[in-house]
Image (cartoon, rainbow, N blue to C red; front, side, top):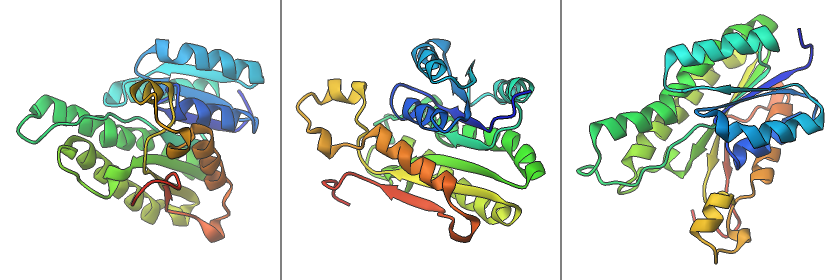
Amino acid sequence: MNQQKVAVILGTGSGLGAALAHRFAKENFAIVMMARTAEKLKLIHSEIMQIGVPVLSIPTDATNPVSVVNAFTEIEKELGKPDVFIYNAGIFEIAGILELTPEKFLDCWQINCFGAFLAVQQVLPGMLEKGRGTILLTGATASKRGGAKFAALAVGKFGLRALAQSLAREFSPQGIHVAHVIIDGLINTDRVKKMFPERDPQTMLSPESIAENYWQLYQQKPTTWTLELDLRPASEKF
């Protein structure tokens, strides 16, 4: 059984998820990457392998309880109980209330909120057994403000923020650090650059810089734990 600390990232894509995997791998963590499809994980998997730490890629449907349980059973079997869990899954749907189908609204809520609930139920027992652990949840501007045509995102992200608060109040006294990170702005990813080719990179959040903040959250001592962290470019209005 691997004796290294284990960091699990549910919602690993080519932007922030990949940056988080790289950041924790550089600190000699064994890395577990989870996404709906294996295809998303192939390139990042090979990059993490070159760093020289154990890496596990598991196709996982965050909204399916059986899929989530099976994934964490495999993690514990292969690497041990997670020390860090990051929920980075999310879906972005712009539509008015009268345009949203019940199916799309439910899908957004499940990915943005319900999946985090399913996953933390799997990681908490091992963290409680150790008496320590870190749970980091990726939020958004919509975590605090429900804008017109953003209900599908805001309802789930509001819920994720509430989950973080409830988790922190229940489990902080038992050694579990829970933090909710509000990403206020566009993340500078390949997809975003294609959508906005003329946009100045300085007006977007760097995935690597966000990942550095997640690492700093992990390093915090119990005497000074952050519950919520706002991150945005200097140019972003708020």
